[in-house]
Image 1 (cartoon, helix red, strand yellow):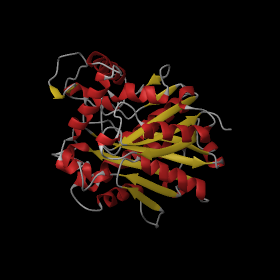
Image 2 (cartoon, rainbow, N blue to C red):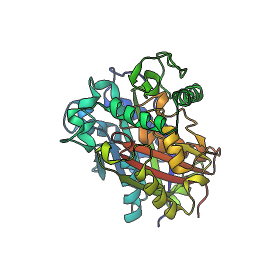
Image 3 (tube, rainbow, N blue to C red):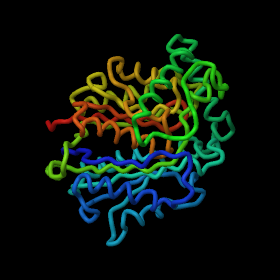
Image 4 (cartoon, one colour):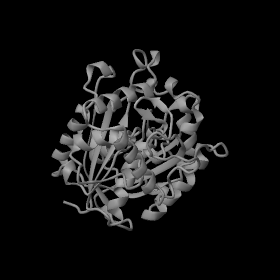
Length: 356
């Protein structure tokens, strides 16, 4: 397989709401930072991929607006996924594997604040006609999963609160984490959203943009800095019917991790750091067990529990994991992204600091 690496990552600070700027205005400074940090120009980018959701913006083809920041003239190779941009990353990685293109930009402009009712939006991704549009709402489905884990002895309300406390404490040093509002992970300090989940167990929505620059072969060695080589990447999906799944485990996570490990030559348990797309506190122990990460540093950025710019959250996990390699903190890293209720669709990306 072709050698492909993350050579740059940039993100704007996550804010509760940004009503002053359009998509291009939010994206442009982040794109400039990402390209400047690796010494590339927009003219040198061979492929552009993005992720967003028209239902968040309330209009069709909303992603076209962001191309004003990318520069669509002269004509560019461009693609878009109607979901988290982690899957745009997977598409860009595939393009670099199967074409002569040497560089790619992957970006997302996550604007969770635009949606007045997320329960009318999220079902349009992986279950547009059947169960989710009729309810239960997304927190209720997550609550069923959390309750199943508590009943099985796999976590507890106290352990879930400790996950939140650790993530928020870690995020205090992250300038991109969501600011505004007081959130703690102490037990019994917030109302139940869907028992046993309390308000602090749910990732707070926000607005932010994120950009990753990928490069293949010698193009990855030319930019300044240390590349984070993508060694394995895979994603798998399960049925949208929660009653047909064992909610205390994730088959799709295990399958994606196993396939990524085959490509990488090392497994999830061998990484130094992992960035997990945990939109609810109970999902961390579930993913840690599924991936064998008991001795791994989890979400050093603070993770989604410190800020959740929907459609950018998964891409940020890849970027934050790559950052740990690029700054020399870690030799191997794992990034996880998810879509759908109760960890329905999962992506695993394994990265390393040295080429093969």
